[in-house]
Length: 221
Image (cartoon, rainbow, N blue to C red; front, side, top):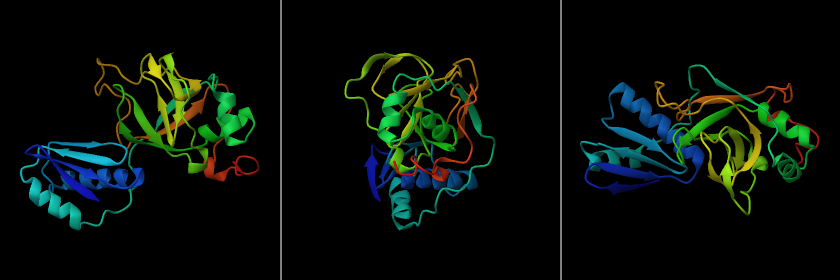
């Protein structure tokens, strides 16, 4: 862990993995809720967490450096279900990369429980983790100039849903009509860090059981 000062009242905490960042974020939220941490904003990213609005950054830095961060606890509350049609233009490419038939992509993806690690890129866009490392996929070599809103996509270890039309280089595996960002809604973003998510196939494809439970070709990918 490396703790860096940012301005006069903020710290940027760097860790070595996304899992550590999620665990640190959860622990900081717990401390703020119990009153042992006074902070304005806690903003997670891929391998960092920003703490802004600290009354005593030096003391907080010392406490963080000496602390043992526990694993991410199970998050209470409901799971957000996102209906999805597995009809993306990159479905066959993802299947080939995983070494499975095309229909298995839907089964594996829909059978996985996801968690929002952090948000960014565009309002309402969450970076979801949950797929095992063997299902990581590279970005497209040539990004698209326009990706339709509602596109369900993969890149590296993450799944995401484009909240609005924009350029993008992720692999598109499906589409959803779910509104990820609505400024008239409170909160405007459907997803926030820590939210649990499941994708529900609207055409009956996919299966419960989780990506780790896959056997045969999927397990060999």
